[in-house]
Amino acid sequence: MLSDFHIHSTCSPDGRNTMPEMAAAAKEAGISVLCFTDHCDLDSFPAGVFDPRCFDFWPEYRGRYADLCAHRPEGIDLRLGLELGEINHAPELARDIAGHTEFDFILGSIHNLRDTQDFFLLRYESEAHCAALLERYLDELWELAGLDSFDCISHIGYPRRYMLRAGFQTAVEDAPFGPRLDALLKRVIENGKGIEINCSGFRRPALNAPLPGIPILRRYRELGGEIITTGSDAHRVSDAGRGIERGAELLRELGYRYYTVYKGRKPEFIKL
Image (tube, rainbow, N blue to C red):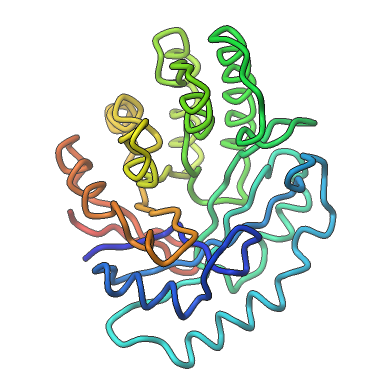
């Protein structure tokens, strides 16, 4: 059984296809359990400033999901989730949003640092500049890991997508970040939360690896981490479910025995 617990529809600002289209494409790709995790970023894109109306799309989102469930494709189990961005920038609002009982699963994401634009938009000046940004990124992941309004942290190492594009190799799995990374992963585990293996990196030739990278996936397992979801991070039908099978195989190679799906915010462990 393959699951995709990170996928977007046109309910996300950058989504290209509707829920029915994405569900049909995921089924075609061999996905058995699909959880929609459309964006709800507490900081607006591209400005990177607090957006108190970020959850205004909820009635439409809930309605579209209900319509999909009423006409669901056979052979696929549907779940409703959210990619909740920058939780640590407005914890009280995040707690209110996460409190909606309709959600099966919530990803916690950091796409931008405080008072800073999305990593997608930043200009990177040097390896030293990248390292300084990654220190701040790890600080914010640490804050996020101590909160309760999410289930798994998404795409740890997200800035690497764009630092590589700019020609810089610095990454959070580099040795200088080791102690801070260990502390972060331990905090995730102690808080009863998990991480995802985000398979979008397999689609990027410059990266050709998941997020987080193999060293972090291995270290999380060594530290006792067991909760891990698989996600394509697809925004269009051509990417739905893409890379999931490869990600599951990598988890097996790294010694994982199970991956995780969620229902009603409760983890269920599926044998690899």
